[in-house]
Amino acid sequence: MRLFVAFLAYLCLCSPALAEVPMSDKLCTQSSATDVTASALLKSGNAFDCSDNKYAVKGPRVWVKIPFLADALPAGTVEVQGDNNGLTTMQVHAVLDDGSLLSSSFSEQQVIDSWRPKGHYGLAVPGTENPELRSRIKNVYVAIDDPKVASSMSLIQLASKERWDGLKLPLSIMFGVLCGMAIMPLFYHVFFYGALRYSFMLWHSVIIAATVVYTFSSSGLMFLAFPETSLLTKMLINYWALAIAVAASGFFLVRFVEQGKIAPWLRTGIILTSILPVLVTAFVLRVDDGYNMDARNYYHASFLPAFFVVLYAMGHALRRGSKAIWFQIAGWTPIVFFGLDRVARGMDLYIGWPALDYGLYFALVMETIILALGVANRILRLRQQHEDTLRKQVELTLLADTDGLTAINNRRSFEREFRRDQQEHRYSHLAIFDIDFFKRVNDRYGHEIGDEVLRVVGRELEATQHFAARIGGEEFTLLMQNDSRESRKNCPANALTEICETLIKSVHDQVPEIREPVTFSVGCAPIARRASLRSVMATADRRLYDAKNNGRNQIVWIDISATKATKPAGTASV
Image (tube, rainbow, N blue to C red; front, side, top):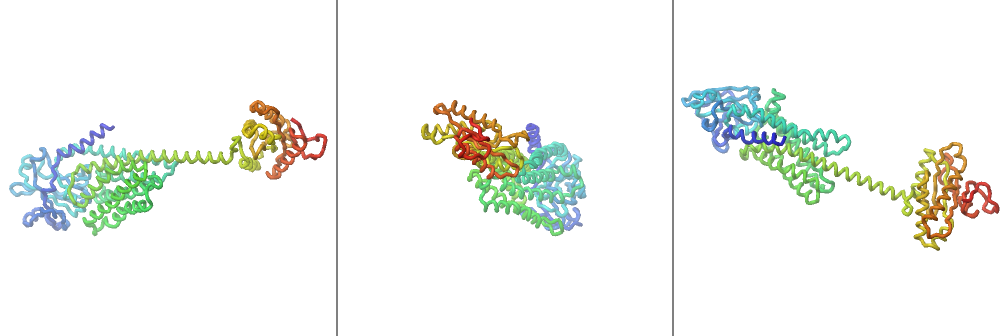
């Protein structure tokens, strides 16, 4: 594909140069009424203007006189070429060495049908198909009715008809390939925007659409699909497409570059200068009788503020450390310089080199591809930032819900789980565990050993099927799961006994520094369907104190009197 595009680029840049002779420095102009014929014009003896002011014509019909340089062109039919923007009817006349006149008239549709790639017309010079008559032609006169742009005259050239007939297909294919390359990122945006919803993707889609429309229209491909499109319509499409592309570029720039990398005042300047071409196009490019060539100068001049502001903004964002701006620098710098050339030629400041037109087409297409890569890179960065933010939120949530020493749930997490259970009813009992004589462990063996005991207890409780939490000091809670409807009413004393035995053994095995057994007191309370956390905790806490006052190392699941000497029903020693 790259070799194919390079081959087409060679054709469009090199072959036309061998098949045409620019005439801008040799032509002269004169204006007249639309009913003046070529013979009447020549008989009048009015002088043609060959000065630098020759394009400032006023009449409804403009005559362009060019010398016929037959020796500079290959043998065969010669045609007159020029910018076809806004043209209607035209005439081409050839004056022979004996003063006789050969004439051809062309309707607007015939001018349209004669289109050449890159927005030119190609009208055959009468008599050039005959070698004998061709050798006798001295001058060619072109009559243009109601020209809309000065380039219809300034870009006039003589060219080989046969050569350009042969170039029409490969150049059309080249422009078609360019349109296809430019439009591919649009499908990417359509596919991903529904999920990602980044606004800069929409603005880049507008840029792509405007670029494709401009390339499709200005290159002449439009006449393959819509052969009856008027040249005035084609001209307005060209101008509006570029204006919309620049406006969308401004909105794209301020949304694409990272937050804070463009100062607020500069963001406002970018938006205002980018929409200026749209406003100027709406006000000065009228299609009624009020249209004049000065409107084209206003149109092209309206792009200058946007170009200079964008150049400054790219440097500004780069100095502020933007990484995304590199894609704009790579994609937009060639366009800005080609655009400045186009503005200068559009304002008729100079004729310019026609090959620069092809450069602008390639720059526009490459811009869409480069910015598509930039959009993909920006999306990846935004997604990474989003994932980092989510990860930090998860980490903060874990820190807020996790006990720092034991790495199990803390009181905040425990209270939230209890509130959730009021809707789901997954837990039947709440048990509070307290380590017996824990202060003595700290005093005798040190706080590091005491902390290790807490960590062992936390790990073992977390390993059960129940919801474990440390609610403060040496106290832990379990929200007991019990799937049997019948046993929901009964305290899971057996399960609690097994858990306490596991805790005692684990502390003994994993904290060998402690020589005596570490035991636990447990208070257990049922969780009624409408019971509040405060009431259930109060019941379990009261029973925990009953266990501690009754000799410790036991589980209490009913309210008992702490003064009773014998062990009451509702208690179990571990």
